[in-house]
Length: 126
Image 1: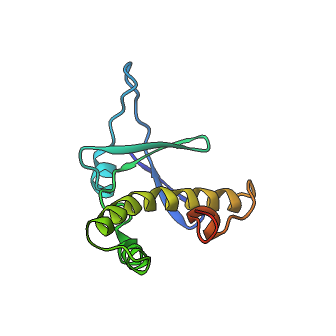
Image 2 (image 1 turned 90 degrees about the vertical axis):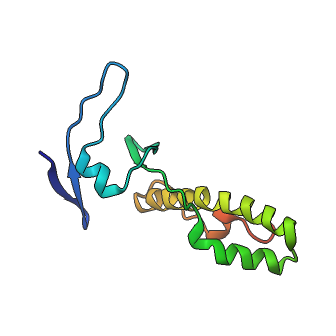
């Protein structure tokens, strides 16, 4: 039976799962459905926690318009624009995740403040 707790203002559900001899776990059906898992999961270490989450196939899509506008303003077009756009889209999600992890460390007073330019680069940081 899942246990519901509140961490800050975010409700958390927790369920103990077994780990097989081959280090395999089964994601509880409720969590699997609720979070939208399909055939792949991302696994990462955050502090002393193991985070398993659904793979997001639309990584960086929320910034597509801004990325495209920036590349066009830099004078790219045609095939070169498409190539640069694909490359930039692949870089958005890791940059956002790095920024989020840094924000968590700053909130926990484990790190100093990092600016948008520190994370994403900018003029003079390329």
